[in-house]
Image (cartoon, rainbow, N blue to C red; front, side):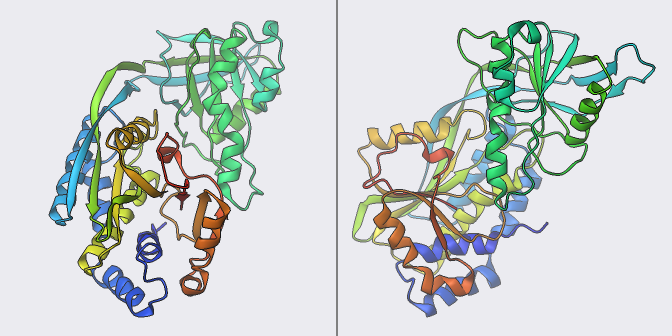
Length: 411
């Protein structure tokens, strides 16, 4: 699938250039992006020359340095790095799982599995009977004697009938984020979940999970959707014994950075509009969609405005946040940094929904600002940029960032 970077960066540039009614300037933006755009090459460098960028890794540090050098090469008014502290977790070298139907001639079946981000290891081979639940609520309603000493299998499928895939994803997120906690409360030895994804294939999906104080920590992993179906079918035949080994573990927190670039406002430079996405990615993929496309087209939007000589009334700042995937320290520490510096933010925008063709904004803010966004529709509809709705602003903007009138937008 070709990542649709150009429409995304145009959306940022057009919406906040204060020339939404000026068809000539919009055309200049399109010409710069389509004829002389640098987004695809920048995304190639980030994903292919650096690759996976999990917080605390050497690749994450490489990505910070690359971003800082790239921003400086564009000669923006200001480029800076904000020092932050991030968690450092590694999945190790052992990640194996298999099962066998007890009292059956069925052969042992090896599984495709990934540890969930932040999981503890198994401390050698872990073996136990597996018990299946279709939802997290079903697990919560189980009795401890049903679960204690077993491996919990959460097999909730994403709803393929949802038009907006994020709704299907959001409905299943809890089995990944909270599965280990709820299974641990009932005395389970480990938890494995069905990967959050619609395709039926052999590719497991990792992602963040968490533990709670006073609840025993247990290993947590995700099975591929194909293997989840196979395990469920085996359980329908009888008792199943599950075998799991992982050597993932936490290390001491590491030093890292948010990377920022600005075009200074001509009239109200002290008033700031933040746009951006997160620089980090999971360790098993290049993160082109999550969130390479987001940071790159934000950078390209700033480059286009700067190249065209646009002078914003307010300061526009691009932020490459670090550690959205497994801690949100970039977003939280950015908010604290802004407050400590006495900055006045009038809007904040995040792009973290993949490199698909954008259709509009979700707004977390007062209704009058939703009406303001919707007033752009006549100028933008011909570019298929016309959906403005109430919604969620994004993980990196969920910290206590003090924004005048609270305008938080996600694409």
